[in-house]
Image (cartoon, rainbow, N blue to C red; front, side, top):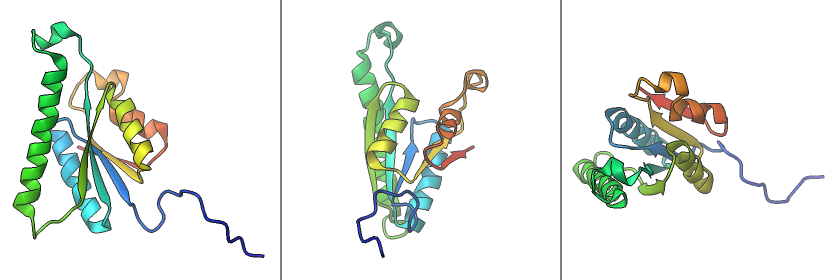
Length: 153
């Protein structure tokens, strides 16, 4: 007897459909975005670019409203992605969308990857020395063991 019931969601079948990449404006995150864009183009997958807006105490922003400051960063990242897309139009085509999340970078990446049912996650290697002790977002994503994670240096 053959089971004809519809199959549930399964990651990794017929190649990735959604690749999530973290982008915070650092050089390693831009390299990760470029790498993920290449993967998405070759696999005809959606590239979901995620910027996690940090929650900072008001005093850390030196008088500027924190939401405005982090919102401006997100707008600048989107503008840079659009400019790159336009510059490469006709040569390098990739479907992409931009997502923002407020809070902890690890939780934000997990939330978006789960919501989009990501097949893979790509992040840049941490550029902060303290992460070797505490653990970077990349290490935490790998340890979560929910998706294949590529860490781009």
